[in-house]
Length: 272
Ligand SMILES: Cc1cc2nc3c(=O)[nH]c(=O)nc-3n(C[C@H](O)[C@H](O)[C@H](O)COP(=O)(O)OP(=O)(O)OC[C@H]3O[C@@H](n4cnc5c(N)ncnc54)[C@H](O)[C@@H]3O)c2cc1C
Image 1 (cartoon, rainbow, N blue to C red):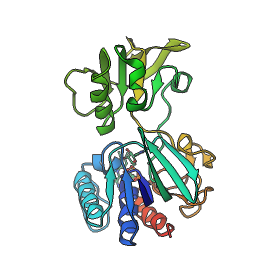
Image 2 (image 1 turned 180 degrees about the vertical axis):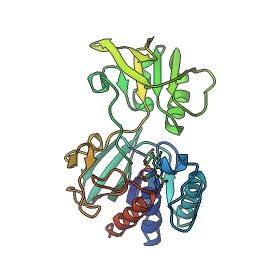
Image 3 (image 1 turned 90 degrees about the vertical axis):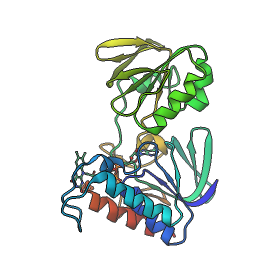
Image 4 (image 1 turned 30 degrees about the horizontal axis):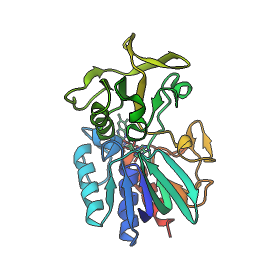
C-alpha cells in the first residue's frame, strides 16, 4: 500500500505526528504493534501535562487516538520489522505485508534490549514473524514472547499449526488453547539450534520462539546513526534523508509526554 507518511509507534510522539501530518493533507499510516498510547497509556496519573492537573494516561491516549482517526489516519496494528530505502522513499515490512511511503517518522520509544542469546538463535529457532516462519514449526512445540495484540495474534496463528504454544507474557489476556506462562525470558538455550527458553529458572523445551516485542531501531533500518542505543538526531532529522524521529527514542530527549508531542509535531512538519 502506498501512502505519504508512515509513522511507527502509537505513543504520544507518534499520535501527535499522525495528527499533524494528516492535518497537513498527507495520507498517513500509523503502525502500533502493541497498545495505542504507548507508555503513556499505562500511567494512572499524569500531573504535568499542560491543561490538566491530573490526567489518566489511558484516557489521554484514547482522546489523542480518536483525534488522529478524525483526521483520516489509518491504524495498522502490527510491528514494523524492516525498513529499506527504495526509490524516492521507503519500503516498510510488517509480517508478510509491505508498504511504501515517501517519509518515515520513527516514534518507537526507548529501544528494547535483545533478550540473552536472542541474536545467536535468530534464524535458528528464534523468529519475529509467525506468519512468515510458523510453517517451519508445524506439529512442534513453540513459544510466543511478548505482550499486546501482536503477541496474541501470533499465539492464535500458531495454535492452528503447532503442537503446543507457550504464551510467555507479563500482562494481558490469556488465549484459550495456549499454555499461559507469566514471566520474562531469562535466556534462549540450545546447541546451535534452539532447544528451549528459560523462564523463572526453568527451561521450557521448544524448537521455535516467536518474539513479538518489536525490533530495536538499529535492526529496523541499515546505517542509522545511534549512540548508546538511542537515535542521534538534529531537530528530528536523522542521518538518513526522509527518515525522521520523535520522542523517547532520540538521544538527549527529555522523555516526557509534552516533549514527545512537540517532537512529533516537528517531525511531521519535515514531511513535505
Ligand atoms: C513509570 C513512568 C512514569 C512516567 N510519568 C510521566 C509523567 O508523569 N509525565 C510525563 O510527561 N511523562 C511521563 N513518563 C514518560 C512518558 O511516558 C514518555 O516520555 C512518553 O510516553 C514517550 O512517548 P513516545 O511516543 O516517544 O514513546 P512510547 O510512549 O514508549 O511509545 C512507543 C510506541 O511505539 C511502539 N513500537 C515500538 N516499536 C515498534 C515497531 N517496530 N512497530 C510498531 N510499533 C512499535 C510501542 O509498542 C509503543 O507503543 C513516564 C514514564 C514512565 C516509564
